[in-house]
Length: 136
Length: 207
Image 1 (cartoon, each protein chain N blue to C red):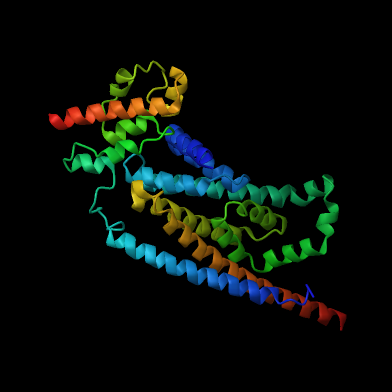
Image 2 (cartoon, rainbow over the protein chains, first blue to last red; image 1 turned 180 degrees about the vertical axis):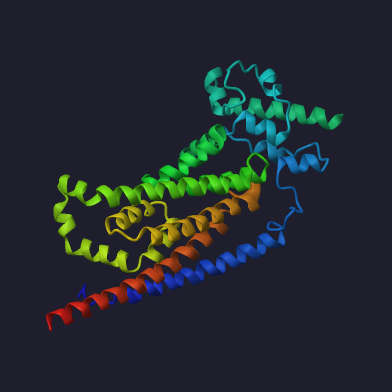
């Protein structure tokens, strides 16, 4: 009975159904993203920290700083927020030679503090710099 | 899962293009690691100005193609001899294995192309193509074509979605399901046609 069951047509039908369903979802998401300007170049809405800086917006929103994660490196943060190279090293008293090529998680281990606390310290330091830059 | 992905993102940020190359290479060679998500993240990092998108595509493509080729050539050169010595001689004489080998030799194009999008299965198909001695030009063309499609899909999705790529992962997932289901249909139809021809050939020989 197992051998006589028409597996191939059934599997082809299942693949066709998955193709149609995923195709519909893909077109729906594509239209929504296109409406929001996601596929236009240059991007009509800020797409990167650097783009916002070049556009003259020197104050980044809290959402950008709140989006920082422990896997991000200080080099990435310096370039993304356009920070002076040694600012975070001075603000957070980082002595490691690896800086800025080290993650926020590695910074937490070096200071022997919880990862969440280290992340808050980095966020506060970035916010302080951004606020000072905005007020200039 | 998030911790594993975070480690890969950190690896790419720490070692940049060399890290991206290594992840793409290892995923194509043997290990089922989250290379696709890492590639999308690298595309997003390029949108943020941290990487160059052309370099991301080039490096990821080079890593994937190199990993595929090593698997293919190693299997082609040492495959069956090594497997026999390891005690898999019975597997090599198995009817299912011989049919699979015959199938990939007859219609390798779609199998090689579509399995580039499935990093868990790709390495197995590379080895199978090597064992079956699929012509190198066929393997090269469909491997590069498939890897180029795969790299462009993930890298450019990450690039255009920018810092929002994680929130729009559904868009990427839908695209992958469309490709895989299309590939599944093509491979199933080809397999069905191949098995019918193989049965007819066997019946002709008997008669």
